[in-house]
Length: 238
Length: 224
Image 1 (cartoon, rainbow over the protein chains, first blue to last red):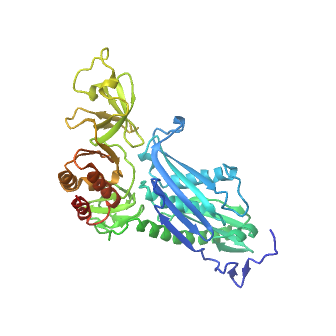
Image 2 (cartoon, each protein chain N blue to C red):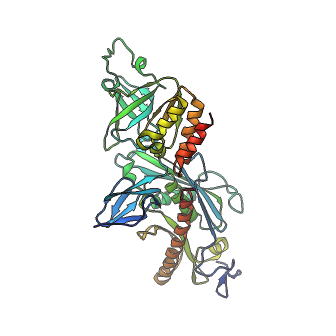
Image 3 (tube, rainbow over the protein chains, first blue to last red):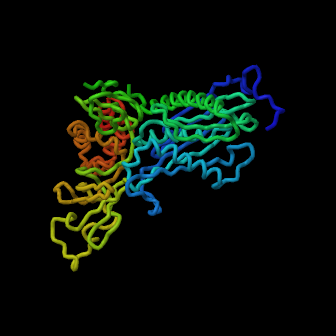
């Protein structure tokens, strides 16, 4: 952890945000024509395009589950998404995030309606500035709804963290790099179920609680944005 | 007594609470803790004591009694496999495939339906593992020869059919085309002004969720 950069000044952060403020967000549904469903989500400098295909037949066959369908997620950082060029292709990190995203999304989809089938979610990070897995999940949830997949609700996600011993919401690149804790969560706002919780760094229970509260409030705002985007797909009806 | 929380025809998202208490949950909804919630992105419909949500998009999942259009994709010793544009292929047995007796020593199954043939068929059984059994016994079922195949979103099929078949009848009437619609979103158009009929069908697919759809389709048909 380097101390040369001042991350907090007079209660404001490097980009002028308050401690409990999210970066500006943008969301859109149905941006890709050839996919069954698609979504775009942006938080500050992090942008993700997600596409959903299916439910469709699952190959190889040994992966099929006779009683329920499965979700397969792919998380990928585009080569141009980061400061230095990212070597394209699967990576340990990408696979792991895909795996946790599968878990986060599986819990809200009525998978028992699609035995043996798969729903594929492709999340392409086109610009990365911390919190990519959260933004990817937000875009993924929009894409799933846009594809007409039966779900219990939406998954909304954002991160909280700790910089200079202060809990803050939604870290951006520099804060993530020089901060102490990064705590991304994903949840269903309606039911309050948390479907993803990861943490990087060190903290104690009290701070953890504070960060969680911040993140849950953040998720609520994210959910509103997702809602707006999906409502627009109804077009000029009404 | 239950309470409906949204108006008829309002737009809902997955997870939205649309009714609570003693109200039945129909297609596109689920019940949780005494609340009826929407399962899909779509339009809520209230009917007496039941809530439904008509999805805006989504694929086709076979259901018993559906009439669908499928493509023969494989031939077995005494059955055909039929692609239905769904995660599950249909199984058409020899007994269900034809009214006439077929002597397997004399005829090849491919003489009846060959790979690539399109058939209009009925789903007669769907098991819990989603094994789909098809039948050609119904007299409306047949092999489709000639014409064109277009694919629309299965969620728009009810709009294309219209109330009591009004929409499709209008298109048929104005274009002199024969049109067969599969519940799985595959549409067969043959004869008459095919181009115009296809355009009309595609319009329903693209603008199916908008109001005043009939007028818009009528406008296109008037071009002739």
